Image (cartoon, rainbow, N blue to C red; front, side):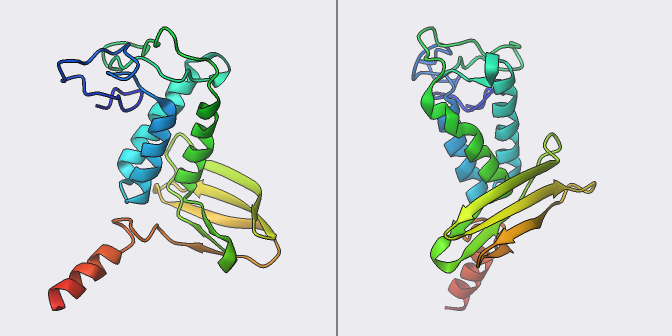
Length: 192
């Protein structure tokens, strides 16, 4: 289902597949951002990075980096341009959420305001080795953070400025395959 520009609404192997059909093979950027968020949440970091790159590259094709509501599902290996659904809306308001979701996903930002806590778990790709988030509000506090990818490929964070009561910790999502929670649950089940 991955075209190289994003995940299609229908597999290219399906008999009804049509790369320029609204729901039978096109790529929706906003839905791909949701998929990206889910991939990262459950620990599929490599797949999330691959999809994030596809969305970034897709935005570079359009004037003002405004991706239409859906684009064609043509495979990137076969065509240098995904094509566009003929009646696609440009710009499309919900597509404005794609890059905030992408940034949240790659930095791993998750706030728990009642606990005065901000969890981060950055995984930056080589094409985005450094990103700074300024004046992020969490409850009554604000924080500026810098995320960096080092030469070994590991991603780190640094608190640049913090105002108010807020703890910043590094923590993958609890349902992530990398959080270790799955291993602990399997051990408990085995001992039970």
